[in-house]
Amino acid sequence: MTDCGEHARCILALEDGTIFFGECFGAEGTQTGKVVFNTSMTGYEEVLTDPSYCGQIITMTSPQIGNYGITTEDVESSRPHVAGFIVKELARRHSNYRATLSLDEYLAQHNVIGLPPMISRSTAKGWCVVPRPKSQIISALFFTTYDFAVLKMGQRLCGVA
Image 1 (tube, helix red, strand yellow):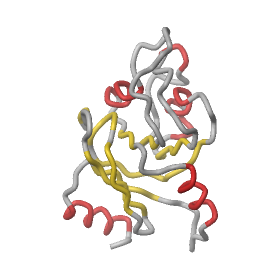
Image 2 (cartoon, one colour):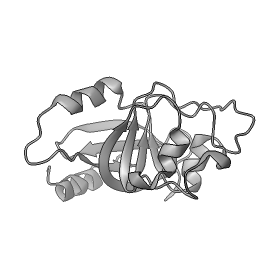
Image 3 (cartoon, one colour):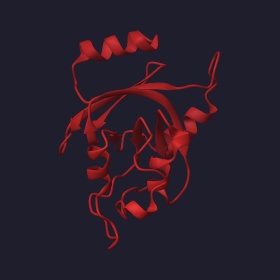
């Protein structure tokens, strides 16, 4: 994975066939994982580096994430464990004097794809009430490309094509 740069386009495809389009931040690449939600208002640094979220795509339901940047003293472990990070609104500038990196820079440095604002609190609430046959797992594929052949291949891997 590489730094996705400003305004890189990406796709989020869910196992139910739902597809979201948007602009990524952090790293560029392809990633899979189980989508889970975190409703905390603060502490995104701790969420990213919490080993219990290993391999999961975290959807933060708080309206703005990234406004205090990344402070290495506040992390739970030496690196992020998440497979992806979805936010409603990414703060492009941080205002904490202790911060050493922006959230965007931190995710790029650790090869984590971030996605705003394609998924919001209302979407998350909708996912929580939709009955799912067989299991509660929602798997997803991140793509930082609009190559629909790649998207179709990914959907087949998830069993939705």
